[in-house]
Image: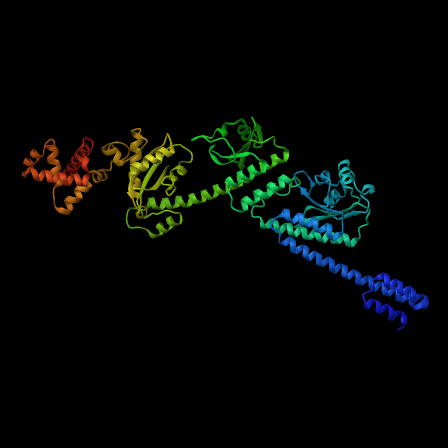
Length: 611
């Protein structure tokens, strides 16, 4: 091997730069022209190969680091910002930027930049086919130019050229972002001086774009509500406030927040008061110095802004207030009202409409959950009502426990009839929300914890308002069956409706319940009025009922009753004291006395029927 080749090999072994190898090769070629020229060419080719290999290793290492960083980001906004920063550094560009596709307008808009100084450039939109970026979007292929302003291959527009000129860009390279075969946007690298992009640099930018596309897919899949919040994502993210609103509202939904959190987020973003109304014009949530709601009706529901928004379905303004209807799946769910702020610009208006969209999403989720819960409750109620009184059913008890109900404790069964919308929801709210309510046989049936049927009926009637009749029966243990109690409540409701009364129980109706409403429940009536006395006579072998008959037949005179019974007057007095302990001290008051006499008469008639 010649001295020339050995010397060049020594330089390569010591990782000498190409300039040093070139210098040494020239010196050796002067001494040995023939072998020196060949050795020089081979040495430089080896040096170039080593440099290229190292460059590719560095690029691959950088791409791995970028992929690791992108994979750790939880949301698309952070992914896009990281992409443009890394692209600028990796390609060695003055500016890097990324545009996203707007399917509605058919163009792309600026979403993220790094190194940009021009506000006009940062708000630029690129129509399909216009400029270098528009051509990339149209063909889904990469394009690059060392000097864009004078490159006639691209369709120049005054808007694009003005923005590019204000930013001072000369050399531009753009490559498409494709997600699952669909065009998403364009990733750019640009310089403010002339620069002929090498194919390796274009390929490197394309690799980064592919990483960006994969990261966007991962970020979108991580967001469970991506479809519902699509309008909040990248469509108008070039506006900083809209991007902040998107991040804030998405955080509310993903963290399980409610309409009060949305109202607070919107109020803080715009510096105003916010109120959320439901479909019945009741206040669901508010933030800031919103007008006070009324006890039955929110005055905000009558404002011109709300009326205009409900009619148009869009954001409307009137009398210093702004309102937007909250709709989902063609159904009106309420309205979002705000005020106390200066006029809203277009970006802020879109933020309000996005807030309404997220509010609709939250309300819709809540409605669907309530409907599912109501179906479960209605099924349980139907099983309880179909079961005759008897032993407790452990399965029913467990189903009730999962719904927060205690079906082994005393409850009252109420039947509610009326035309008011949402009747079962109002009925279920009784008993501090621990009741069970649902539609059954053309009426709403509520099973409410408690022992006083009259009190429960009155409370339900107050909650449900005018035009509703409530009849109640009980107390009864639901797990043991509700068929008989429900039948009594139905008869009571019929009797109340016939007499024009709003609420009550069989005890409130007295004997009137036997002649109004449905078929007379004589056994039930006798049990309510005389049951304790009859049971006492059966246990003790006494005749308190006979003493009552004699007492009333004697016109309420103990002495004449004693004569009729052939006992001492003190004996009659003692028996009547026992009656008072069983029926209550008011047993001989006119109303109670009339009920007792009627019950005694019915009992005698029934006894005569069977003899």
